[in-house]
Length: 609
Ligand code: ADP
Ligand code: MG
Image (tube, rainbow, N blue to C red):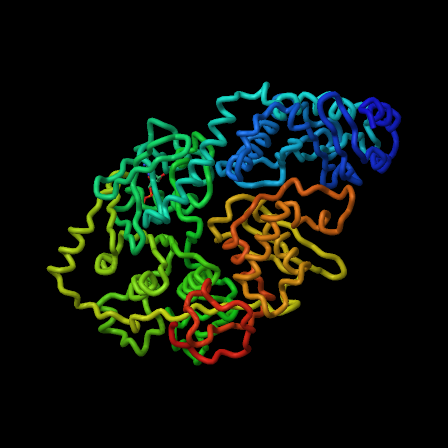
């Protein structure tokens, strides 16, 4: 239908009951774009209406090179959503009546560039998905006001954001090139034996504890790589860049309080994502499988084999299949590690500030006072190097309060006035001149990684007869009758990722992946493969039910499998069958022979392959 038709319809709705707006669902052609009204809210106070605008690729003027390859396409989409948001701020009048009347909004990102459903760039078209509060006076349609938005404001927004000619071409190009460089850098890490890279000139500190924006220049000490760890890379767009490469193995970050240790680690945590130009961390890149590990007492744990780290708990609690409704600091931290390894993490990031001390260290005095037989915990210090040798799992660990880790660290970095210095040699000399009185605990073996299969029915989005799924920021995911606390899952960085996680869990159930024979690792792989194949839209229940004009999923952002696993592992309803590798199969979870059935019970630890 023509846009003039929409105009007439809206004018005729003026003064009628709000439900009459339902009639405007449909597609309308404007001069340069098509407007889709996919979902119309039932009430001015309800969730706003969902719309899309689509411009033919040709007419949009974006050169094909801007979206060649996944990195560039995602970054271009990200840019367009941001441009649309900027245009909204500039041109939309805002409140035009009761409830959400007059609001126009799009789900655009923060400092990270994430794949999101708010924008879609293909060879045929560019599309933005956004929401509009259709205006009302009380509960009566304000059709003329609606026309002012849909026929007046929206075309201006489209003109400013979906046309290459009206955007700053240099800034669009810089955006996609920055993302492409970051992904190239991430791939270069592995072949260089590095786990992370921090470029010279990077700005790591943030404006405040509640803002992810960079601390203002002038107050920042820019990052400079120490000579010993200096590496250079050639990036596809930026060319040669230099900075600090953190090698695989065990890296200790130490130094005085308030000298920038945690700030460095935080930047590494976020380095699994790409950042926007100007963020300061756009050349701070970490392996994609890095997982932040912390203590999280109170969380639920379901049948996790934490026995390499904790054994012989009081009352004979079985730590090869450890379950609790209320984990302690140390058991929660152990479970967080084992769960991350189970689904493929090969880099652990740990900060003393958020760790359980008794999990991290057990010093000589304590070894004298409390016999090993009376201490269930094998401190992480006695497994951290074993983890690397046996499973290729590296660790970057911040610790300023104890020198015990000198002995096991391959690299020691001291932060001094926010600048890194390599002190590995000094730390070794100190160890050598103070021969260890601390005795090593643990058998020098971590053991096989056990896979866990969620039982059928235990992941359930239903509450009563209806399915219920929603989120509150990045802290809480409501899933069926449960409220899942993901507030301490620190690499879940965007509310739209939380929404996607909830829908991915629902998708896994719908697709039949929760069948008791599919392990957590396989489940993540299958969900992510579906998304890879069909785009992030596939997790939307509306798309899945084939609704022709359902509510478009314009507010998902792609999470990693690790964060999806974190949500599932925190479900209080989760029920697991362990699947232990048969003797002779490789001992890493990733190398586990496919198709092996999950076995009930826990037959004890099998020898590593
Ligand atoms: P630590 O973990 O060593 O105790 P933090 O990393 O928490 O220290 O940093 C202490 C303070 O210094 C924080 O307020 C942080 O924002 C600030 N800061 C960190 N790095 C820098 C930097 N490079 N330049 C300026 N301020 C910084
Ligand atoms: Mg700190």
